[in-house]
Image 1 (tube, one colour):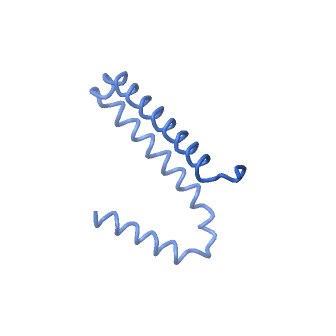
Image 2: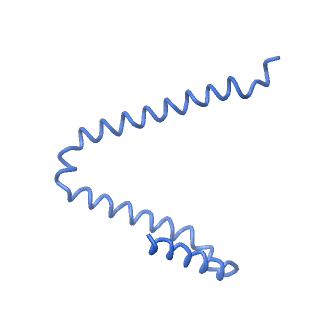
Image 3: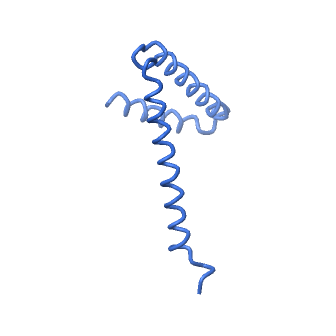
Length: 91
């Protein structure tokens, strides 16, 4: 945990010191590259795990149900907020 906090504070300090440099313009691209690399490595680790690969159907169904539930819950909450909080048209 202290390692993670240390890296974050180190990055914060490094970014603060280089805030006016041209290298800052490449930070977004480097972050995207790092995220793509991490996603690729996550895919490799999942693909190597035989237990996960054999249970894809169950995992896929659970993921689908969670996604549908999250979307439906968000839509219902947005509808309630729009109806009861933002009553501009009603007098």
